[in-house]
Image (cartoon, rainbow over all chains, first blue to last red; front, top):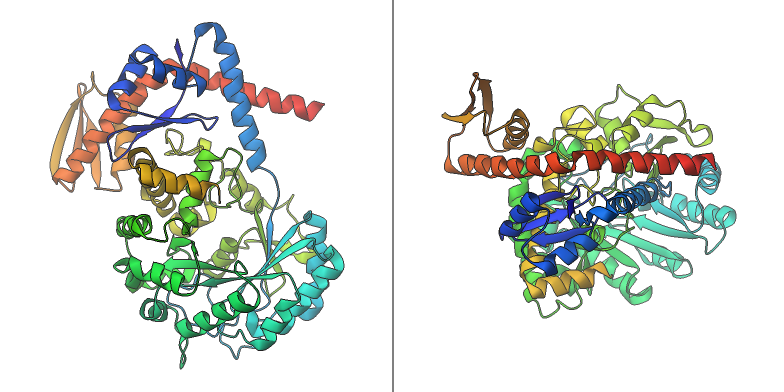
Length: 464
Length: 91
């Protein structure tokens, strides 16, 4: 037998997780891993058969074929993940009625007159999307709070229907739902519109970070979710949870809040290190604290009577990257990164960015131009910054990633590393991106390998 | 502070430097060398730091043995990928 190249990582249970550049994986006990490295085979023929089928070892007479198979797997992966298939985000206004403690994109005051999209630019934006994308186009309306300019949201939908064709696009409004009312409900009823909103816990937790002066943000979102569920149907509203310090010690309240509103899908993420979120030190916590929270949440879901219907999508995405070859729909977990390839953002001021994170960088590092022009004059071929960012996003070449067992399933975030370390590669030993994704992979794979109940749950989530 | 002396005949520079790269998340450190030994000074000398350094050194020793046997194959695979993509482009 001939040993083929692979990487490994020790899990909490003491078992090792092995992966190779084609994305095959397996679990081995320490003794068997040492036997494998020393003798190119283990003492168990059943294990050797699995190792051979995963191209971790190869009989010497088929070594060339095994090299070709690994190369083919790697090439297919690189090609799949290099496809340009973006979500088109449009910001009709940066104005917002909330002053959230962790706001990722900053906000503008409600009475500002300088932070709205000029209506006449909408046809140009949609025309550019038509040229760049293919059906079904994915349009996500972002903010600020986009419903502050509901009139522009309506015009964006109408223009998309006219230029892209009804039924040829998905339309998601990312909103706090604080301004949702019967008028918006009535408009959405006759259109294919989805809503994405924030739900950060129960009323105490949600309202402690999502500040709506003189009003109750939690009650507003709860009422709106109920209206959408009742009138538009289940599945028309999805939630994102940003974990705040107030939630860290209360994971059960998050499940309760979702179930109370009839929501069985959760998408949970730590606070982003971008821009304005960085400046609120009272909200900061370590990735170790986050993982303690996440482990408790996972155990609560596992023990819940509703376990068979609940889905936590951040775990699902991590597991899909390992279990479902070809899954590359999540911009953070792909290499090259999803910058530009998976996202383009049309800002209220007419500028176009390769990602939501790039516009955040623009707000924080104003001396550099992180845009690629305006909708009618996008210039990518001469854009040195975009060239550098994409060039720097192949994690297979990154120091710290090249020997990581999770590299084939992980991604890279050059914008986050520019924000936190001043350059796109980043020292991975100090990188929050690396800490978060590596700890998620480690935890989920350890659960998968040691707990049959967890394995069943995670496999179900992989098929959601 | 805690000082670790590692015999150069047992630990290569590749193993030591890769281990210390990841130790940065746990503790600050300095590295010096003599003809025969690596001298690592750990600024945060608790048992967790020592355990983490031991784990990293052991894992990188194993990785080094793996690399020694598979490095040429790794290059062959990458070359094969590039040739394959080039062939597609020239069709």
